[in-house]
Amino acid sequence: MKLRTTQNSIRLRLSQTDVWNFAENGVAEEKIQIDSASEAGFSFRLQRSDTSDRTTATYQNNCLTILIPSRIADQWSTSEDVSIEASQPNGDASELSILVEKDFACLTPRMGDDDKDAFPNPAAAHG
Image (cartoon, rainbow, N blue to C red; front, side, top):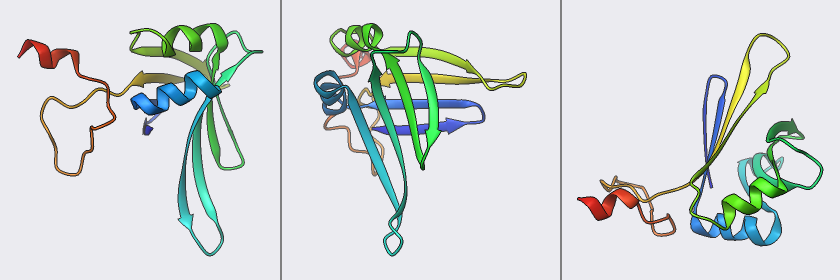
């Protein structure tokens, strides 16, 4: 699973294995180890929610969690739907943009990228 952030936006990109795990277990998670001596780290998680009716983001205990309502999570993870988009008020005049999407293989290979578990890129068939 990949995380991208820009100003007030969060974007998660999930591999085929991540989407399968999310569909089966209701959660996909990554942890970034910062300091092995103190076990400090940062994690980010996509989680199915049976109680929420909208997609939301929370941050607690060094973990960013994106909660997806069950009906949306089930539809997205078991179909050809590519993304889930949402926004959340920040308590001031701004909003947090949330984007969760299936990770497609790049059309142009890049050094260091590993696309072996990415979804086949639909544009690859056209060119």
